[in-house]
Length: 127
Image (spheres, one colour):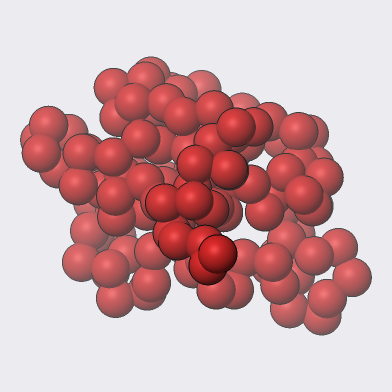
């Protein structure tokens, strides 16, 4: 039987912890957390969480790979604390699961994503 997006996200959430937008507001105050926006660049440019780094879901593995020539050194430390978010919480759950597979030990996914964030009228930026 074919798998659906729901199936993949449900499977990812067996090991990925979700946090609420309100919890992410608190985590943003902790400089040991890296906030990763896994949406596409045009989504990021339209608005994002302050301090977020944009690594689109489709390019995340390249940026996190320790040997790839297009890796990003900000993803070298597998013990760093990471919060992933996307538009609604699906891509970020899958991204967090992927990072776990790549050896990251402390990865969270923001429940409800950007939609939940802006619905609550939490601070955004376009820097």
